[in-house]
Length: 76
Image (cartoon, rainbow, N blue to C red; front, top):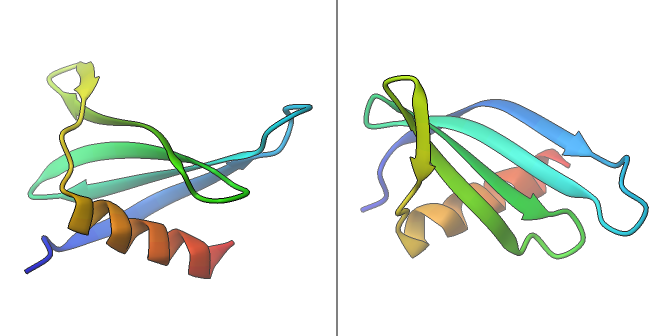
């Protein structure tokens, strides 16, 4: 079963000369996260969890990442 999440914001950064990126900010299990993909193939670049005024690398399940990737693909 996939954890329920809600994408709260999406940023498509196309100002780079070589690559474009898509960052999705989302909440899951009462925590805020950010995940960045390459826009061309939606390969994951990084993911962060925001806790108590700091950000840490997020350990997200493959299932959750794939679900978010599909959601992002539909929105761009």
